[in-house]
Length: 214
Image (tube, rainbow, N blue to C red):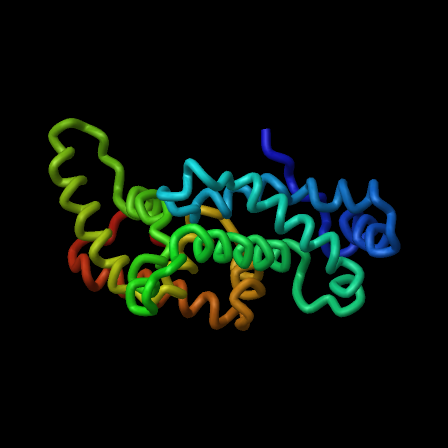
């Protein structure tokens, strides 16, 4: 079972662990980071290109991000540029991007790198399934497949940041404050990007207004 993040991150146990870890308490550091390992592993697994499955494990990417966090924690605790989990999320995203560059983009031309290193990750298929309504009766199988194809095409027309908002919202179950902190925008801007992405998908699907598009 994945560990849940510590309760009351604003001023409770997590805050205490953060202060103690920043002062060098290794047990506090371990508990602080372990509380977020499960969420970070899911975040990485959702985005890990299937071509890397035999070479890179999501847990290894997360471990590298945890080591980065341990090295930078004192500065983070002093400056508090954003809440803890969004900060860890960014560190994991940086490590994941580095893994994609290392294993997929070596010795490629700039154009080819841009085309092939676009992180074709499992989140695309999962997001399609999440956004397609689910009548599971056999008679609706063909309709569902058509819907999936239409949603897939619609998602392909979204800006990368707008797709990422949908992934964070529907697959990672992040709150809008968390999404905003990760993207470095206001909460209102994050909500607007989410709404814009949903409206874009709906407009491309025209009469398909089903699924958990809230």
